[in-house]
Amino acid sequence: MRPRENMAGFLIVTMVRQWQRVSAYGLAREGDTVLLVQIGRSAHGDLGKWMPPGGTIEHGEHPAETVVREFAETTGLEVRVDGLLEVGSDHRQLTGGIDFHGVFMLYGVTVLGGDLRPQPDGIMVEPSWHSASELDSIPMLDAVRDVLRTAVKK
Image (cartoon, rainbow, N blue to C red):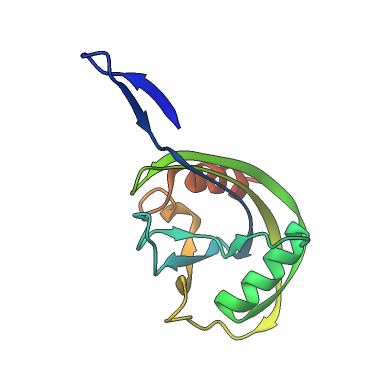
């Protein structure tokens, strides 16, 4: 709660909901392309934006395990985590007055097998390969775009 006074001297209390999320994502490459998934369900205004496969780290889970699990769930692919590429942070106001702070890790991954498939009823849908040169032109969260730009140069 954040108290403040209005012009008449009355105390006004504003409730601020904070949400901190720690997540891990994987960057899979095939030639000059990278694998991205599209946000299919979102209560926070991110619907239709693209990002690497990944998600929230579950309690007790190593971030690399998160990447392997999320790749299988959202893309149908089995991956090996090769190493940490970047760490990013996203602090912004979400719809509904939520003060959001996301901290995320981006790992390089190698695809070992599986068949690329959409997850039509999931939060992440439509996995597809995109040219690295497209990263500036497709809808994406700014913090994710910044980390991807740096990572694809490595």
